[in-house]
Image 1 (cartoon, rainbow, N blue to C red):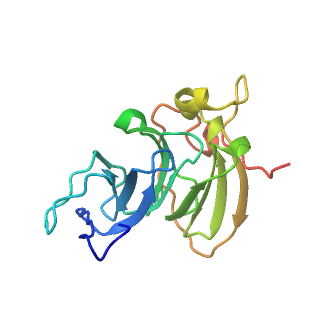
Image 2: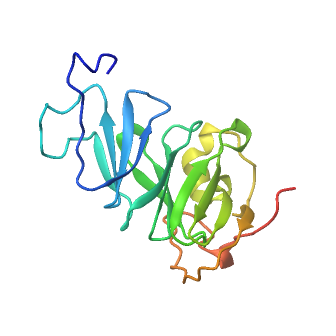
Length: 205
């Protein structure tokens, strides 16, 4: 890659249009590719496919994360193995991919419409906070450390509040004209599945 004129460039193929590409900040030899088909592929950059191949490249693993395109994707820069995805199916999902064994931690409809962006906070003190924006023109800040499933899976990696914690959103911003019906919330292993299950919208002190 440092001498593109003297060596063939590497090319990885996937089964659908590419939506997002991200390097793994915890191991720069690897990168993620998300697709319009709702899949995540995890590749090792040190083992490129053979030149001129026309078939999809073999990843370390592939995950069918959503029914729709994965239009939002982030890797937590401070907590290894912690991923977030968002889709035009209006869902935000959190994943544990430690040891190359991806599994869903929790799924939420944060009432932002079709999800266009999701990003973890860059600072250690708020490493579990995830900002999410979508077609309704709103931004939600989800304190994922208040979700029981997230605390169970990733709590050993960072200092978390002790005792019983109510799941909450930190803030809400913006406002759009688009009206959309919400899908039913899902919670695989977590608690507080929706606004009547322990959600709390509040402004940050």
